[in-house]
Image (tube, rainbow, N blue to C red):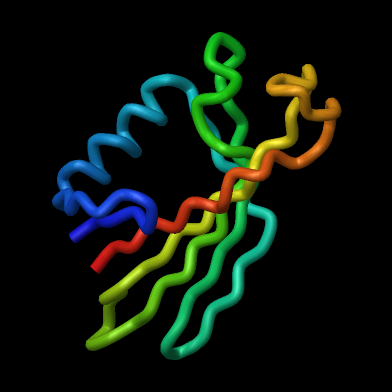
Length: 108
C-alpha cells in the first residue's frame, strides 16, 4: 500500500515501482549523503540530480526510513525536502524556501 499524507488515494506497490522506473528512464540520479542502519531501522538520505530538460522532476533531497520485521522492510517512509525558489515565482524572494509542506510517502 502506498499513500501520500496530503492525498487519501491508496496506490499499489506497482505504482511506486513504475514511478521509480520512470525517474530512472528520465535520467534522474540519487547521490547518497548519509546511511544509518540498525537491527530494526534503516535510514538513508540523498540528493536528487534532476535531468537538465526536466529540472523540477523531483525535489532536491529525500530521507528514507525503513522499519524492519522478519528480515525485511515491512514499512517505509519517504520525506522530500522543500524546494528553494530560483526566480522569485509567486512573489517569493529568490532562494527562499517555499511554504509547501514536505511530502511524506508511506509504504506498507
